[in-house]
Picture (cartoon, rainbow, N blue to C red):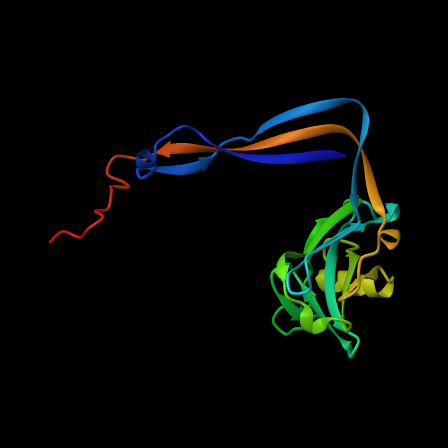
Length: 216
């Protein structure tokens, strides 16, 4: 496994210079560190933080070996025990009914290579879920696309047909350590990928400063 760390560099220039220049992305700088022997990076499969009115929830989906690196989709769903036939899906920013007319079968991560471990930040910013305590449930699953002609709907049906989904959290319950396994990945190499932002000079006559106060 490789770990990636992204940094942002802005080559030395003053704010005044930025008014007459544009940003452009140069090639990333990559620093590779080979470990003298295999190490381990460990984390809880599910991370639940905050109170019900400010909940942050992350989960790591483990893909079985037979589906490693296939093309597919990850789905994150919400259902209520009081409405068992209704299912909502999220892409990490919005929630829609799974059969929504405008965007049906919305994946959390769509048309991706199914890595052995996939992180799903269900609530990446604090979310108030108080009204769903004891009733709402978060589910996670994945579907496989058999070929390049298949869509997210095919992937969703594949997930349902093969039961590749499970409940991650019933809102209001604790994520108990004994039921929340620790995941450990063996690592032999680390890459630090530094994102470099350069400054492109403007052409003569372009990007002239705009007066702060309109002329009288």
